[in-house]
Image 1: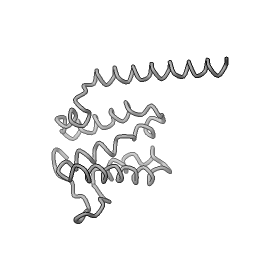
Image 2: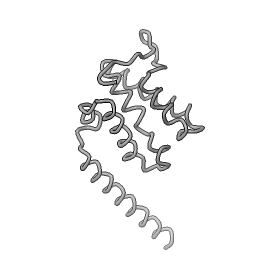
Image 3: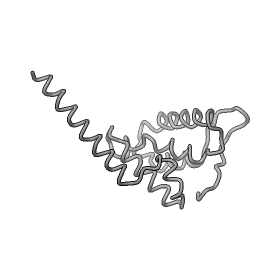
Length: 139
């Protein structure tokens, strides 16, 4: 994939319905997605088409990568704390395809340490919120 354009199925203003990168990643994770495969595929294509409507197809491959991985950690890791697993999946995918220079752009220039710090802060905040909610419910 190293910096190649996608062979997306689109004509004029038509919606994108087939992008090899998206379809390949989804098929790779089909078992994890299970019965949600079609729903998640549809969700990913809605995200892609919305982004393309605003940004155009110039960055379609990057949009495709970001869209296909953005929620995938829900299924691959079985958790709604999916941001870190989704980022890890996308990061590993990009590294394996020689697209390391896309990582900063897709992840907003966060390095791995900063992502870990944000995830730890989020987890701590969520734990505190859960504790407060539990205490309030038992009071």
